[in-house]
Image (cartoon, rainbow over all chains, first blue to last red; front, side):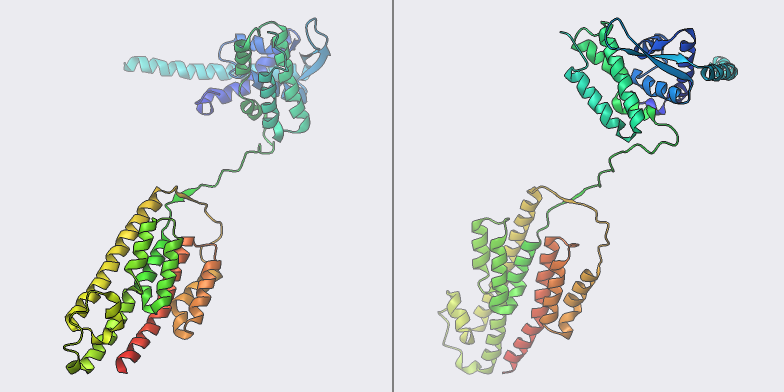
Length: 121
Length: 302
């Protein structure tokens, strides 16, 4: 863990947003844990500790937003594949519209702040 | 080299994770461990782990086990178990109560004649903070103690003033030996007696000062003593009884009350050994002084 993590406001934000990113990834295809983590890792600054994805997946499964199925793999032991459920899709849709408004508001304010900063200099 | 989940690095990581997850519900703990194990297996199967460095990098990216478990906590979860904060330990420098008591007994305590002085000698020799030479000096410089000599000189002055005419020619040449002076104290001429008394009081005090100073210095070289804060109050019934018995008990029931007070003091676990020794010295002297005063009065009147 990075020293400043607890103070970083993005840590809390990331934690709340990440499960919807997982849901979004699963709308395209079923994935197993390792693959899912790799996909999330491709987006910069989304995941700091890959291990924290697993408690998150566990939580999504308990609230019924994803299901898991075991499948044989060509290399190694069987893998647990995650699939989004109908309830998960509802949750994701709700979040997406909320998030868009939220993001626009934050962006709007932050850009205005930037503008003032530029004037001041 | 082929890496598997049975690699010591991986095993150690999973063990730490298991320990950190001890506070989670069993099914969630199982789930979490299974997921992480599977992740590592998949990473190894994918061929991205080729050597120890890449294995370490994989575990690094997973994050600290404690961090992963912390992220698994949800509102309503029992507070994750954490070791209770270690009690704050204070350190105090070692006390020199025994040495202080020894010197008190050898000087003021010698008013109790042989007993007080003997107690001082026993304390001197049981101390670890004086060398053999210092112990010898302490024992020999206070033979009988200055109080003993002071007492004798009071008696001598009292006696000589009574029989002033017969004293003149007797003891002019016999001043070099201490033993003869004290044993023949009745005949001691006044100027020699005064010098002797001063020497016998000043010298022990100087020695006492030096010995205490050295004991203090050596005690400071010893490791500090940890003091764990006690939850109990420092003043229990036992301690109050000890202070009362030691402080004023002697006036009510001489000898017995101070001894009872000392027993209480030594039974208490709220005082350090040093403090107990000082209490012992003060209590003994407190018990002895009235006795000594009475004896001096009796001797002066007879």
